[in-house]
Image (cartoon, rainbow, N blue to C red; front, side, top):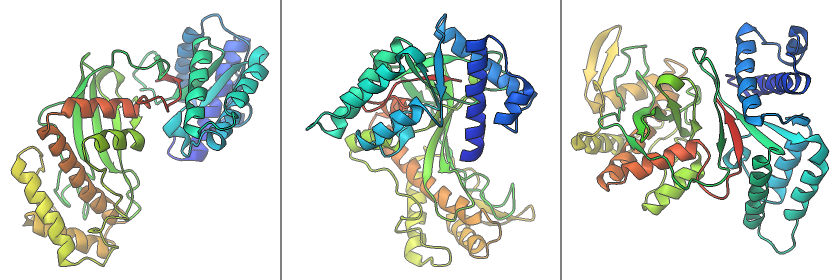
Length: 390
């Protein structure tokens, strides 16, 4: 899938056009039409669009007569109301829909109803959002208004899945738990690539009560930035490999951690013990050495080999030397990702501390379940319904 907003827009508009041609006209769009929408269209993308469309057709059944919206039409109409009337500041935290279908013969009714229920005098924005979500659940169930979230589909996956999310609560939620011994925060520096930590994340594995396997990682997803936000991302393994669940909403994280008396680690740019490049002092260094020693003594984190390599030769070992060398590498800008990966690894250690605290409190299952539904954007009445195709 795309790595920037412009490319994502092209790909999603490609899905929109493909959906409309097949579902409404009963034929695939020509290559000329698709290339006019998405200049990266290829046989591989045609295969992806076919899988997406078959999954959508199966969900819609005999329903036809839709208007397909992304950049114009009902989708930006709803997003604008959610922002202005309902207090939605980050759209994807509320509803990750990428394309919206609305029945043409009911579009005016849908838009009028949404405008009416979100424009009630004296009602809080939170209450208006609850009403909006409730109405969208009703219209999704009737297949009148269908918001669609598109996820990556593995090349080896023969058919895509369509799953309704957040459309009626989780009366029987799937339980998820950590795979014992899977927490890894490798601190090997320079072995796989000069001047860089072998990985920049805290990695972990989870398993659902139904046997589904999921790999998670907490890291900075843009290493080129010296100091950036660390996010937690979940990706299914096995038969659904490659179909990301997505990044866990900060709202879901804060909701769970707040109930435990814990706080989410701050971003590297705001952390009081991660100074700008070249501004390190002994107090900052000691903070991270002490945290490592605390984590290491728990025996619950796999740190790998805590050592530094240069030219395939070990030149130092131990947490003090690893930190000293990492500071040197980022100060000299030895690699454009040195600083970003270093600060990501430090925040990953704080996430490791969060995990250990939760596990010791006997709440790993609740925590993993919260992460799972936080990635699915299903964790409360403030989240809108959508159809996920993956």
